[in-house]
Image (cartoon, rainbow, N blue to C red):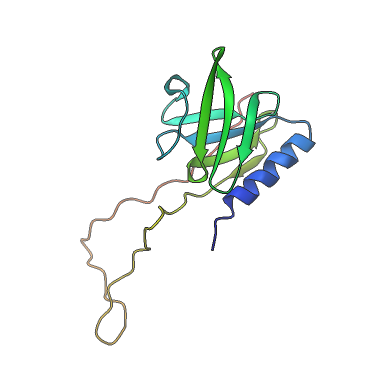
Length: 142
């Protein structure tokens, strides 16, 4: 099944624009395929204003968002794969949506090994597992 992220993103951009607000994207700048100016990245993230008055040639398809934008008065080409988009929100009031991390393409979900009778084998008590990641969050600063 295809990801719902591009559909939700397009709907929220339309909703934010219809209400006369400014859509902003929070992007994981270190995700594969992201092309943004390095000086705009802060803490591995970049916030992008995608209002129609702020960008040129905005393209939103199921794979990525691309556009031309000015950073410090210099025009740059921006390319953001859908999987790198962490959130969309309205700058004026912070309303929007945080997206859960997407599994990597081609990565199969980890399954517990099965025993001969088909039951899941118990996990070792001392097995080292990575601590669960906290979901991204947005904070409204006034």
